[in-house]
Length: 186
Image (cartoon, rainbow, N blue to C red; front, side, top):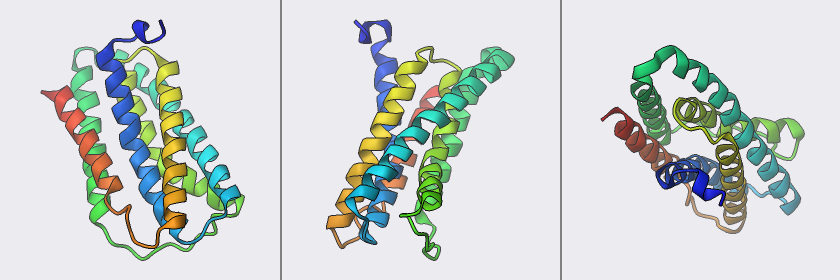
């Protein structure tokens, strides 16, 4: 019944975008988990990521609705352009090799900064979705649930694995967003 109120294409788009954004949390979670994170902190960090993955797109959705009313007919082009830029930025960031930041993820400040850093992309996606999607609750719950689950998986996998498995997560997420952006434009 709930799914019938949303077009299946919109539902698939929302879930794939949630997965793309969750891949960022997954890949960074692996890196943090490899440094050694207690199970208690995995839950705390994942809950914060889920919260920010709900808050940021919600803020973006409201901004996107406003922008959508201003732009009118070119809304699809603007939404697609934003996704192309965001996807390209994520791909570019995946190739950059900067020195590792030393941050204590066990502190509230460290957890908040980590959760915000992996959730900031959700704001831009929220702006794009706010221009054409009407089901805010589905978007917010999907992004939060997928972001939280992906971060739990990444942190847990990183905690148990010693190799760098998550290098390509941000790149894959960027490619997905780039493809959706191009689909909106063309």
